[in-house]
Image (cartoon, rainbow, N blue to C red; front, side):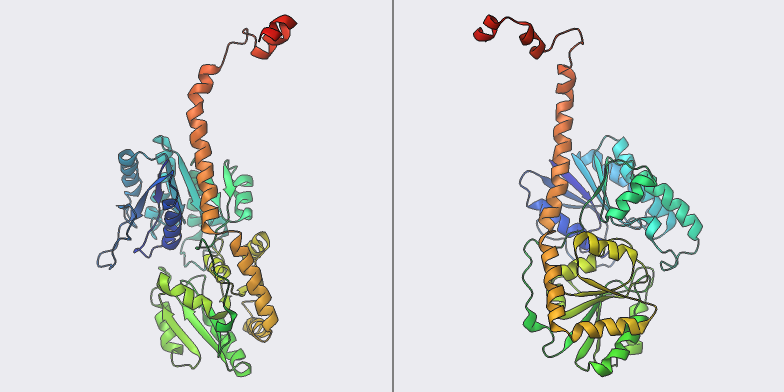
Length: 418
Protein backbone atom coordinates (compact mmCIF):
# COMPACT_ATOMS: atom_id res chain seq x y z
CA UNK A 1 0.00 0.00 0.00
CA UNK A 2 1.43 3.34 -1.07
CA UNK A 3 0.68 6.20 1.35
CA UNK A 4 1.29 9.89 0.73
CA UNK A 5 1.32 11.94 3.95
CA UNK A 6 0.48 15.64 3.56
CA UNK A 7 1.99 17.48 6.51
CA UNK A 8 4.44 20.09 7.64
CA UNK A 9 7.68 18.19 8.19
CA UNK A 10 11.07 18.92 9.80
CA UNK A 11 13.25 20.88 9.43
CA UNK A 12 10.18 23.06 8.88
CA UNK A 13 8.83 24.45 12.16
CA UNK A 14 5.27 24.92 10.96
CA UNK A 15 2.37 23.59 12.98
CA UNK A 16 2.21 19.80 13.46
CA UNK A 17 5.67 19.22 11.97
CA UNK A 18 6.63 17.08 15.00
CA UNK A 19 3.41 15.06 14.78
CA UNK A 20 3.97 14.55 11.06
CA UNK A 21 7.50 13.30 11.76
CA UNK A 22 6.34 10.73 14.30
CA UNK A 23 3.56 9.47 12.01
CA UNK A 24 6.10 9.11 9.21
CA UNK A 25 8.61 7.34 11.42
CA UNK A 26 6.06 4.69 12.37
CA UNK A 27 4.83 4.25 8.81
CA UNK A 28 8.43 3.60 7.77
CA UNK A 29 8.45 0.58 10.07
CA UNK A 30 5.54 -1.04 8.21
CA UNK A 31 7.04 -3.45 5.67
CA UNK A 32 3.74 -3.68 3.78
CA UNK A 33 3.52 0.07 3.11
CA UNK A 34 5.59 2.60 1.23
CA UNK A 35 5.59 6.25 2.24
CA UNK A 36 6.05 9.55 0.43
CA UNK A 37 5.80 12.76 2.46
CA UNK A 38 4.23 15.70 0.61
CA UNK A 39 5.68 18.43 2.79
CA UNK A 40 5.79 22.21 2.98
CA UNK A 41 8.60 24.06 1.25
CA UNK A 42 11.16 25.62 3.59
CA UNK A 43 11.23 29.37 4.03
CA UNK A 44 14.08 31.22 2.34
CA UNK A 45 17.12 31.26 4.57
CA UNK A 46 15.86 28.46 6.80
CA UNK A 47 18.68 26.15 7.80
CA UNK A 48 18.43 22.40 8.06
CA UNK A 49 18.96 19.28 6.02
CA UNK A 50 16.34 16.75 5.05
CA UNK A 51 16.07 13.85 7.47
CA UNK A 52 17.70 10.67 6.29
CA UNK A 53 15.68 7.64 5.21
CA UNK A 54 12.55 9.65 4.39
CA UNK A 55 11.22 10.29 0.90
CA UNK A 56 10.27 13.96 1.29
CA UNK A 57 8.76 15.87 -1.62
CA UNK A 58 8.27 19.55 -0.77
CA UNK A 59 5.44 20.28 -3.15
CA UNK A 60 3.42 23.03 -1.42
CA UNK A 61 4.23 26.38 0.12
CA UNK A 62 2.74 28.00 3.22
CA UNK A 63 0.43 30.91 2.31
CA UNK A 64 0.31 29.92 -1.35
CA UNK A 65 -3.06 29.94 -3.15
CA UNK A 66 -1.87 27.15 -5.44
CA UNK A 67 -1.54 24.42 -2.80
CA UNK A 68 -4.53 22.35 -4.08
CA UNK A 69 -3.11 22.41 -7.61
CA UNK A 70 0.32 21.34 -6.39
CA UNK A 71 -1.18 18.48 -4.41
CA UNK A 72 -3.33 17.35 -7.34
CA UNK A 73 -0.20 17.29 -9.50
CA UNK A 74 1.60 15.23 -6.86
CA UNK A 75 -1.29 12.74 -6.69
CA UNK A 76 -1.20 12.26 -10.45
CA UNK A 77 2.57 11.80 -10.28
CA UNK A 78 2.82 9.36 -7.37
CA UNK A 79 -0.60 7.61 -7.65
CA UNK A 80 -0.96 6.77 -3.93
CA UNK A 81 -3.46 4.28 -2.57
CA UNK A 82 -4.06 6.61 0.40
CA UNK A 83 -3.59 10.35 0.72
CA UNK A 84 -3.38 11.17 4.45
CA UNK A 85 -3.75 14.82 5.52
CA UNK A 86 -2.37 15.87 8.94
CA UNK A 87 -4.16 19.17 9.47
CA UNK A 88 -4.92 22.25 11.47
CA UNK A 89 -7.18 24.89 9.97
CA UNK A 90 -4.04 27.01 9.67
CA UNK A 91 -1.79 24.30 8.20
CA UNK A 92 -1.67 25.84 4.73
CA UNK A 93 -1.56 29.52 5.67
CA UNK A 94 -2.14 32.27 8.20
CA UNK A 95 -3.97 34.46 5.70
CA UNK A 96 -7.67 33.67 5.20
CA UNK A 97 -7.65 32.97 1.44
CA UNK A 98 -4.52 30.81 1.49
CA UNK A 99 -5.69 28.81 4.52
CA UNK A 100 -9.16 28.24 3.04
CA UNK A 101 -7.89 27.29 -0.42
CA UNK A 102 -5.53 24.73 1.10
CA UNK A 103 -8.39 23.11 3.00
CA UNK A 104 -10.18 22.41 -0.28
CA UNK A 105 -7.41 19.97 -1.25
CA UNK A 106 -8.89 16.83 0.41
CA UNK A 107 -12.21 17.04 -1.44
CA UNK A 108 -10.47 17.89 -4.74
CA UNK A 109 -8.11 14.92 -4.47
CA UNK A 110 -11.05 12.65 -3.64
CA UNK A 111 -12.91 13.91 -6.72
CA UNK A 112 -9.74 13.11 -8.66
CA UNK A 113 -10.15 9.48 -7.59
CA UNK A 114 -7.71 9.23 -4.66
CA UNK A 115 -8.75 7.84 -1.28
CA UNK A 116 -8.30 10.73 1.18
CA UNK A 117 -8.18 10.64 4.95
CA UNK A 118 -8.00 13.73 7.18
CA UNK A 119 -6.66 13.78 10.74
CA UNK A 120 -8.10 17.05 12.05
CA UNK A 121 -6.47 18.28 15.25
CA UNK A 122 -9.04 20.94 16.17
CA UNK A 123 -12.41 22.36 15.18
CA UNK A 124 -13.11 25.99 14.34
CA UNK A 125 -16.22 25.73 16.56
CA UNK A 126 -14.02 25.29 19.64
CA UNK A 127 -11.40 27.94 18.92
CA UNK A 128 -11.56 31.21 20.85
CA UNK A 129 -11.01 33.68 18.02
CA UNK A 130 -10.29 36.55 20.41
CA UNK A 131 -7.31 34.63 21.81
CA UNK A 132 -6.20 33.97 18.23
CA UNK A 133 -6.12 37.73 17.46
CA UNK A 134 -8.73 37.41 14.70
CA UNK A 135 -10.11 40.78 13.53
CA UNK A 136 -13.27 39.57 11.75
CA UNK A 137 -14.59 36.71 13.92
CA UNK A 138 -17.99 36.36 12.20
CA UNK A 139 -16.38 36.01 8.78
CA UNK A 140 -13.93 33.48 10.19
CA UNK A 141 -16.78 31.48 11.74
CA UNK A 142 -18.58 31.37 8.43
CA UNK A 143 -15.44 30.35 6.53
CA UNK A 144 -14.67 27.77 9.22
CA UNK A 145 -18.14 26.27 8.87
CA UNK A 146 -17.74 25.95 5.09
CA UNK A 147 -14.19 24.58 5.43
CA UNK A 148 -15.39 21.97 7.94
CA UNK A 149 -18.07 20.77 5.54
CA UNK A 150 -15.49 20.55 2.75
CA UNK A 151 -13.13 18.50 4.93
CA UNK A 152 -15.98 16.12 5.73
CA UNK A 153 -16.22 15.36 2.01
CA UNK A 154 -12.99 13.38 2.32
CA UNK A 155 -13.44 9.61 2.40
CA UNK A 156 -12.91 9.59 6.16
CA UNK A 157 -11.97 11.94 8.99
CA UNK A 158 -10.32 11.34 12.36
CA UNK A 159 -10.51 13.71 15.34
CA UNK A 160 -8.65 13.49 18.63
CA UNK A 161 -11.46 14.14 21.12
CA UNK A 162 -14.81 12.29 21.31
CA UNK A 163 -16.61 15.63 21.74
CA UNK A 164 -15.30 16.71 18.34
CA UNK A 165 -16.70 13.58 16.73
CA UNK A 166 -20.10 14.30 18.26
CA UNK A 167 -19.99 17.85 16.91
CA UNK A 168 -19.14 16.70 13.39
CA UNK A 169 -21.88 14.08 13.41
CA UNK A 170 -24.65 16.05 15.12
CA UNK A 171 -24.05 19.57 13.79
CA UNK A 172 -22.49 18.86 10.38
CA UNK A 173 -24.10 15.44 9.69
CA UNK A 174 -20.64 14.03 9.05
CA UNK A 175 -20.15 10.41 8.04
CA UNK A 176 -17.10 8.18 8.45
CA UNK A 177 -15.89 10.30 11.36
CA UNK A 178 -13.67 8.46 13.85
CA UNK A 179 -12.18 9.25 17.24
CA UNK A 180 -8.54 8.24 17.58
CA UNK A 181 -6.17 9.04 20.42
CA UNK A 182 -3.53 11.71 19.92
CA UNK A 183 -0.90 9.29 21.17
CA UNK A 184 2.57 9.84 22.58
CA UNK A 185 5.70 10.24 20.47
CA UNK A 186 7.46 7.11 21.65
CA UNK A 187 7.20 3.41 20.98
CA UNK A 188 8.74 2.38 24.31
CA UNK A 189 8.55 5.14 26.92
CA UNK A 190 10.95 4.72 29.83
CA UNK A 191 9.71 4.67 33.41
CA UNK A 192 10.43 8.08 35.01
CA UNK A 193 13.52 8.49 37.17
CA UNK A 194 12.06 10.25 40.22
CA UNK A 195 15.53 10.86 41.71
CA UNK A 196 16.07 13.57 39.08
CA UNK A 197 13.10 15.61 40.30
CA UNK A 198 13.20 18.00 43.22
CA UNK A 199 16.90 17.31 43.57
CA UNK A 200 18.01 19.92 44.42
CA UNK A 201 15.19 22.05 42.92
CA UNK A 202 11.62 21.55 41.76
CA UNK A 203 11.44 22.52 38.09
CA UNK A 204 8.03 23.84 37.07
CA UNK A 205 7.80 23.50 33.30
CA UNK A 206 5.72 25.53 30.85
CA UNK A 207 6.13 24.44 27.23
CA UNK A 208 4.56 25.59 23.98
CA UNK A 209 4.22 28.33 21.38
CA UNK A 210 3.35 31.45 23.30
CA UNK A 211 1.48 34.68 22.76
CA UNK A 212 -2.10 33.87 21.67
CA UNK A 213 -4.22 31.41 23.65
CA UNK A 214 -1.08 30.34 25.55
CA UNK A 215 0.17 33.25 27.64
CA UNK A 216 2.59 33.64 30.53
CA UNK A 217 1.39 36.61 32.58
CA UNK A 218 -0.82 34.68 35.03
CA UNK A 219 1.70 31.86 35.39
CA UNK A 220 4.53 34.25 36.24
CA UNK A 221 2.34 36.08 38.76
CA UNK A 222 1.41 32.74 40.33
CA UNK A 223 5.09 31.82 40.52
CA UNK A 224 5.95 35.07 42.32
CA UNK A 225 3.24 34.26 44.86
CA UNK A 226 4.51 30.75 45.58
CA UNK A 227 8.25 31.42 45.39
CA UNK A 228 8.62 32.76 48.98
CA UNK A 229 7.02 29.57 50.30
CA UNK A 230 8.97 27.26 47.97
CA UNK A 231 12.45 28.80 47.48
CA UNK A 232 13.77 25.64 45.81
CA UNK A 233 11.24 25.98 42.97
CA UNK A 234 12.37 27.08 39.50
CA UNK A 235 10.10 28.15 36.63
CA UNK A 236 11.30 26.93 33.23
CA UNK A 237 9.54 28.57 30.28
CA UNK A 238 10.34 26.64 27.12
CA UNK A 239 9.28 27.26 23.55
CA UNK A 240 9.06 30.09 21.07
CA UNK A 241 6.51 32.58 19.74
CA UNK A 242 3.25 31.60 18.15
CA UNK A 243 3.34 32.68 14.48
CA UNK A 244 0.61 35.25 15.23
CA UNK A 245 2.53 36.78 18.17
CA UNK A 246 6.05 37.54 16.97
CA UNK A 247 8.33 38.93 19.70
CA UNK A 248 6.14 37.87 22.63
CA UNK A 249 8.61 35.51 24.31
CA UNK A 250 11.49 37.93 23.80
CA UNK A 251 9.52 40.72 25.45
CA UNK A 252 8.72 38.50 28.44
CA UNK A 253 12.34 37.38 28.71
CA UNK A 254 13.53 40.99 28.74
CA UNK A 255 11.04 41.82 31.45
CA UNK A 256 11.66 38.83 33.71
CA UNK A 257 14.95 37.34 32.51
CA UNK A 258 16.91 38.75 35.47
CA UNK A 259 14.58 37.17 38.03
CA UNK A 260 16.24 34.41 40.05
CA UNK A 261 14.77 30.94 39.66
CA UNK A 262 13.22 31.79 36.29
CA UNK A 263 14.58 30.54 32.97
CA UNK A 264 13.62 31.11 29.31
CA UNK A 265 15.01 28.36 27.07
CA UNK A 266 13.60 29.48 23.70
CA UNK A 267 12.98 26.88 21.00
CA UNK A 268 13.71 23.33 22.21
CA UNK A 269 15.19 20.88 19.72
CA UNK A 270 13.72 17.37 19.56
CA UNK A 271 16.79 15.74 21.12
CA UNK A 272 16.62 18.00 24.20
CA UNK A 273 12.99 17.25 25.07
CA UNK A 274 13.75 14.11 27.18
CA UNK A 275 16.03 16.11 29.50
CA UNK A 276 13.53 18.96 29.73
CA UNK A 277 10.59 16.77 30.73
CA UNK A 278 12.58 14.14 32.59
CA UNK A 279 13.74 16.66 35.22
CA UNK A 280 10.40 18.47 35.62
CA UNK A 281 8.38 18.03 38.82
CA UNK A 282 5.25 19.41 37.16
CA UNK A 283 3.98 20.69 33.82
CA UNK A 284 1.75 23.77 33.95
CA UNK A 285 -0.56 24.64 31.05
CA UNK A 286 -1.71 28.26 31.57
CA UNK A 287 -4.00 28.33 28.56
CA UNK A 288 -6.87 30.75 27.98
CA UNK A 289 -8.54 28.33 25.56
CA UNK A 290 -7.80 25.08 23.76
CA UNK A 291 -7.37 24.13 20.13
CA UNK A 292 -7.83 20.40 20.50
CA UNK A 293 -6.13 17.57 22.33
CA UNK A 294 -2.92 18.93 23.85
CA UNK A 295 0.29 17.54 22.40
CA UNK A 296 2.16 19.05 25.36
CA UNK A 297 -0.01 17.09 27.82
CA UNK A 298 0.77 13.88 25.92
CA UNK A 299 4.48 14.66 26.11
CA UNK A 300 4.08 14.97 29.88
CA UNK A 301 2.41 11.56 29.95
CA UNK A 302 5.23 10.07 27.90
CA UNK A 303 7.75 11.17 30.55
CA UNK A 304 5.48 10.58 33.54
CA UNK A 305 5.05 14.23 34.62
CA UNK A 306 2.10 15.50 36.72
CA UNK A 307 -0.01 18.17 34.99
CA UNK A 308 -1.67 21.34 36.27
CA UNK A 309 -3.93 23.06 33.77
CA UNK A 310 -6.39 25.88 33.34
CA UNK A 311 -9.94 24.62 33.77
CA UNK A 312 -10.94 24.22 30.11
CA UNK A 313 -13.76 21.88 28.99
CA UNK A 314 -11.67 20.29 26.20
CA UNK A 315 -8.93 19.40 28.68
CA UNK A 316 -11.40 17.99 31.19
CA UNK A 317 -12.81 15.84 28.40
CA UNK A 318 -9.31 14.73 27.40
CA UNK A 319 -8.43 13.84 31.00
CA UNK A 320 -11.62 11.81 31.43
CA UNK A 321 -11.43 10.01 28.08
CA UNK A 322 -7.75 9.05 28.43
CA UNK A 323 -7.59 8.74 32.26
CA UNK A 324 -4.93 11.43 32.61
CA UNK A 325 -3.88 12.88 35.98
CA UNK A 326 -4.55 16.62 35.60
CA UNK A 327 -5.30 19.03 38.43
CA UNK A 328 -7.31 22.06 37.31
CA UNK A 329 -7.17 25.66 38.48
CA UNK A 330 -8.82 29.00 37.71
CA UNK A 331 -6.56 30.90 35.31
CA UNK A 332 -8.26 34.19 36.16
CA UNK A 333 -7.11 33.78 39.77
CA UNK A 334 -3.30 33.46 39.92
CA UNK A 335 -3.59 32.51 43.58
CA UNK A 336 -5.59 29.44 42.53
CA UNK A 337 -2.74 28.34 40.27
CA UNK A 338 -0.12 29.11 42.95
CA UNK A 339 -2.04 27.06 45.54
CA UNK A 340 -2.40 24.10 43.17
CA UNK A 341 1.31 24.10 42.31
CA UNK A 342 2.30 24.38 45.98
CA UNK A 343 -0.04 21.53 46.96
CA UNK A 344 1.58 19.29 44.37
CA UNK A 345 5.20 20.20 45.12
CA UNK A 346 4.73 19.70 48.86
CA UNK A 347 3.25 16.22 48.46
CA UNK A 348 5.80 13.77 47.06
CA UNK A 349 3.28 10.93 47.21
CA UNK A 350 0.79 12.89 45.10
CA UNK A 351 3.55 13.70 42.60
CA UNK A 352 4.39 10.03 42.22
CA UNK A 353 0.76 8.88 41.94
CA UNK A 354 -0.02 11.45 39.24
CA UNK A 355 3.21 10.68 37.40
CA UNK A 356 2.52 6.94 37.38
CA UNK A 357 -1.09 7.46 36.26
CA UNK A 358 0.05 9.58 33.31
CA UNK A 359 2.79 7.12 32.41
CA UNK A 360 0.28 4.27 32.54
CA UNK A 361 -1.97 6.22 30.16
CA UNK A 362 1.01 6.73 27.84
CA UNK A 363 1.60 2.98 27.61
CA UNK A 364 -1.93 2.56 26.25
CA UNK A 365 -1.46 5.04 23.40
CA UNK A 366 2.03 4.68 21.99
CA UNK A 367 2.53 5.99 18.47
CA UNK A 368 2.87 2.48 16.97
CA UNK A 369 -0.53 1.57 18.42
CA UNK A 370 -2.12 4.75 17.09
CA UNK A 371 -0.64 4.48 13.59
CA UNK A 372 -1.53 0.78 13.44
CA UNK A 373 -5.21 1.70 13.83
CA UNK A 374 -4.99 4.06 10.87
CA UNK A 375 -3.16 1.56 8.67
CA UNK A 376 -5.66 -1.17 9.55
CA UNK A 377 -8.56 1.05 8.47
CA UNK A 378 -6.75 1.94 5.23
CA UNK A 379 -6.10 -1.75 4.57
CA UNK A 380 -9.76 -2.63 5.13
CA UNK A 381 -10.72 -0.01 2.57
CA UNK A 382 -8.19 -1.35 0.05
CA UNK A 383 -9.47 -4.91 0.49
CA UNK A 384 -13.11 -3.88 0.14
CA UNK A 385 -12.24 -1.88 -2.96
CA UNK A 386 -10.47 -4.90 -4.48
CA UNK A 387 -13.54 -7.09 -3.84
CA UNK A 388 -16.03 -4.71 -5.46
CA UNK A 389 -15.60 -5.97 -9.07
CA UNK A 390 -15.72 -9.57 -7.87
CA UNK A 391 -18.90 -8.97 -5.87
CA UNK A 392 -20.56 -7.40 -8.92
CA UNK A 393 -19.51 -10.38 -11.04
CA UNK A 394 -20.93 -12.84 -8.53
CA UNK A 395 -24.28 -11.05 -8.26
CA UNK A 396 -26.77 -13.55 -9.80
CA UNK A 397 -30.23 -12.93 -11.19
CA UNK A 398 -33.04 -13.40 -8.68
CA UNK A 399 -34.59 -16.30 -10.66
CA UNK A 400 -31.48 -18.50 -10.21
CA UNK A 401 -31.78 -20.57 -6.98
CA UNK A 402 -28.98 -20.32 -4.49
CA UNK A 403 -26.73 -23.30 -3.87
CA UNK A 404 -28.26 -23.91 -0.45
CA UNK A 405 -31.79 -23.87 -1.92
CA UNK A 406 -30.72 -26.36 -4.59
CA UNK A 407 -29.38 -28.79 -1.99
CA UNK A 408 -32.49 -28.53 0.16
CA UNK A 409 -34.57 -29.49 -2.89
CA UNK A 410 -32.27 -32.34 -3.88
CA UNK A 411 -32.91 -35.94 -2.82
CA UNK A 412 -31.05 -37.54 0.12
CA UNK A 413 -29.26 -39.81 -2.27
CA UNK A 414 -27.90 -36.91 -4.22
CA UNK A 415 -26.62 -35.37 -0.97
CA UNK A 416 -24.76 -38.60 -0.21
CA UNK A 417 -23.03 -38.50 -3.58
CA UNK A 418 -21.97 -34.92 -2.86
